[in-house]
Image (cartoon, rainbow, N blue to C red; front, top):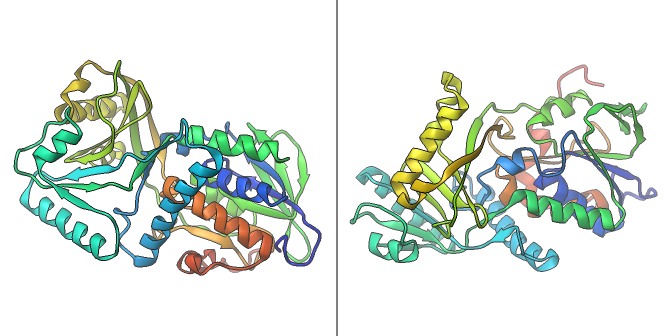
Length: 378
C-alpha cells in the first residue's frame, strides 16, 4: 500500500532514526504524511554517529548504477544544505587520496581516469601541491595525490538532529528509547500494527525498516528474510586543541577526517581486520592513533576521546535494499551501507514511492525483491 494508492493517508512508522530513517521521515512529513519515528536509542546515536561519514562516489565504481546513485546522493546533500541550512553538519571541503607503493599508485590513477571518463571531477596533484592544501601532512615526495574536490564529510548526528527536529515541527511523532518487538499483519498479510518495548501498540498502515544493523531482525517480524553481511568497523575520535587538517583523506593504512573544531575521526580497514582476532578496543584505538600521527605529526598532542566498534548495515550482496516488498503490503526497506552518502537521495526517492506508488528507475538494481522470501512466510 502507498499513501497515493487511492486510500486515505495512513500512519507511517519509520523504524530506525539514523540518517536513512530521518531522511525518509523528513521527506514524508514535508508532504503531509502522518509519521512516527521509532528508535531503541536517541536519534542519530547508532551507526550514523560511528560512521566515517564521507560523502563520495569515487569509492563506488563496482557497478555504474551504484556509482550513479551515489552521485545523486552527493547532489541531494547539496540540495538539502540549501533546504535546511548547512551549519554544523555539512562540510564540502573535498577529499585527498594517495598510495605509497607503485602498484597502489597505478590503481589510484586508473580509478581517477575511469571516474574522469564518467564525468566525475578529479585532479591529480603532486605531493608538494597536496601539502600546500594540507600543510600538516607528511608524505613521500614523489607520490601522485588524487583530489576529489566535490566530496565532503558530514556530522551525522547533527544532520539527523536537524531532520528530526523539522519533521517533528511538521507534526511527526518521535519515540526514542523504544525497540520494536512485533509488527502485526492483517488477513491480507499487510502491515497493521507495531508493538514497542514499552508495551505501546501503534496502529499503522506502513512500516519503513531503516533499522541499520538490526534491519534483518525487523524484517523477520514480517517473516521477511533480509540477509546481511557481518562487517564490523572500529572508529576512533581523538581530541585536539586545534584540528590540523581541513579535508577527508585516505593515506596508506589510515583514513582521517576533521570532526568539528576540536576532534578528528580515524578509521582503517587494516585495523578492522583485527577486530575478530580478539584485540582489545583500546589497543585498536592506540594503533589507529599511531598510524594517524605518522601522517599528521601535529596529532602527536591529541588524545583518544572515544572509540566504538560499529556493525555496518550491509545487505548480503553489498548493495542497498530500498523500496516496497510486494509480498508484505505496507512494508518498505531503506537499508544500506554508505548511508551517509545515500541518505538524502534514498529518503527523497522512497518517500515519493510511498506517497505516489511510483517506483523510480534509479532504484531498479536495488529493489528488496532480489532477496526472495522464504517459503511458509506469513
